[in-house]
Amino acid sequence: MIRRAGHLGLLAVLFLSLTGAELQSGASADKLTIDPVSKAARVTPYASDAKDATATKVFKVYSALNFTAATTEALVTLTPAADWVDGSTGTSFTITAGKRLVIIGMSCVTKNAGAAVQGVITRIRVSGTGAVTTASSTLAVCGAGTYSAIANVVGSLAVPVSAGWPTHIELSGTNQIGISQIGTATAGNDVVVWGYEY
Amino acid sequence: MRSVKVSVLAAIVWMATAGFILWSSSTAQFAVVDPTSKALRTTPYESTGNTLAPWFDFTSPRPAQLPAVPTFGVYTPIRLFSDAFSSSTAEAGISILPERNYKQMYPGVNASVAHSPPPGRQWIFVGLACSARQAAATVPHGLIVRVRVGRQVLSSGGTPLAASVVAADCATSTRMTVSGVNAVGGSSTRWSRTSPMHIELSDEMVIGLFQLGTASANNTVNLWGYER
Image 1: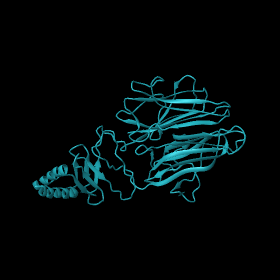
Image 2: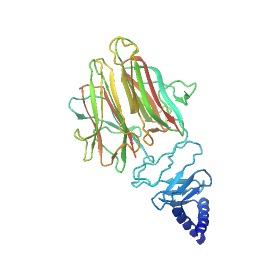
Image 3: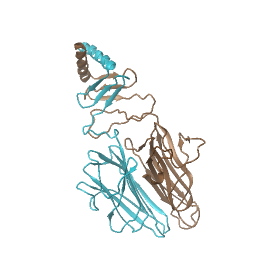
């Protein structure tokens, strides 16, 4: 019986390779396709939520350059970028519906605007209930300060928010993201958050 | 015709119950039906050793949210760097000669600010490091290096990089206040993580390094990764 089924299987393989065909796995929606021309085999992997982290990435950057910090915490006006094209500035951004935003890292810099030391703390804020405020949940913190009271001296920090798959931080389409700042009330501060949507 | 249908159905049943390996006829790619989970796996064929499309080799059953593991082709180290540039108080591009496989990428070509992967290739940068070394004993100096990335336009000049997206940055400062010649400050930024958490740049993109800080010499920057 097994030998007979094997013979039939070989016939089927011959048929598939000659004509091109699709074969669906019984345990999932994974799909094997035999190209009718090249006879190459391709697989469309199964993902229960129809997402695959490597299938389609839209690179995301949220940044603010040379912003002025304040001694009272406030939201930073950010420039969002998608696939290296800037969008409209704002303080709270919704993750694209049906997508997930993976945050890879963030960095912050403060550069003495004058002959005095200065510092800034930036916080990634996430809200699951509307726009981000300074009271929203803190996802990550990045702080920087200068050590010399001389103009243009800098302090910086880079924070690896995610450590690599699957130890990563991702937000869903129901979340909004923003950044708050508090520090010396001077200009010369940068914050950059980068990652991708999938 | 009826016997062919029977053959196909019987083959699928047999694959699902016994496990099966299927080779494609024109490549070395093959697919496996797992005998336990019935899920499919493939080991991809890459005729050039480089592929821009992700091919997957996944274990089964694959939990929700656990990603496929891309199979990469040839990794070729690349580097955008400058071992001696001067910073300025106004942001400006850093002229660099890119390296591929530890050799100058374009021999005979002058250093420039904007760079792109060759057609059909991707650059994946892993990290960015910068350092500042005091050129004088009088004051410490600071340095900010910004990685800017833009999409190329059809004109040969590409996107004006100074206005492009800041994709990552690195900043440092020396801390000596007196007699600090050769005092050094350094910093680094991990731009990418393990796959798939990396930033790929296609040949549609143009990348450049920009600096600002104290007007001083003796700065370095190193942006490293690989081409595929």
